[in-house]
Amino acid sequence: MFLSNFESGVDAKKRVSIPAPFRKVLGGADSVFLWPSLDKPCIEGAGELLMHQFEDSMADLDLMDPRRIALANYIMGEARQAKLDEGGRIVLDAELLVTAGVSDKAKFVGLGDRFQIWEPAAYEAEKAQMRALAKDSIGLLKAKPRRAGQTPDKVGGE
Image (tube, rainbow, N blue to C red; front, top):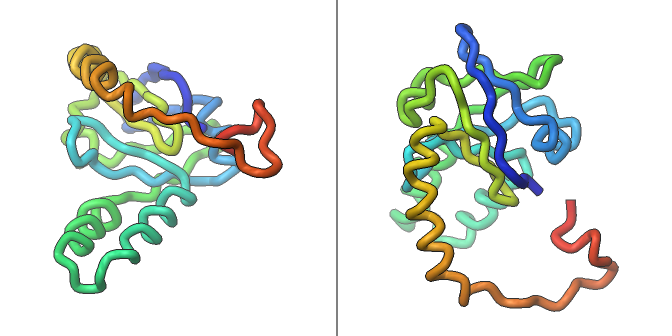
């Protein structure tokens, strides 16, 4: 699970280090998938598993449903696969950098199944709004029974 938040420098070649805990979640994968957020001024990122989950979820919609096509166009069509180098760095695509306003610093924020990459000041500016929405939404969280084989330290899986 992608948890917590980390700040990293972006070098002149537009490389940024994926935080070590995030690399661990990727389980040795040599790349991540990045796409512009649909509703925030940031970059979304994930491993291959979430991309397959997006694909499976979209496949539940009718083949010619315009919403399916729009979602596929925006998520799959805008996604970039970024290869990790031996130091755990990726090169951030110039178009994504502009979309998110990221230049010399990047704020990685874990969202469980994915992460976001923000310009640090933009993240701080949005934080109060996100906290207020989370506070208003707290009633949506429901306790779920554990699945067979889950122990308290394995709830949510890895």
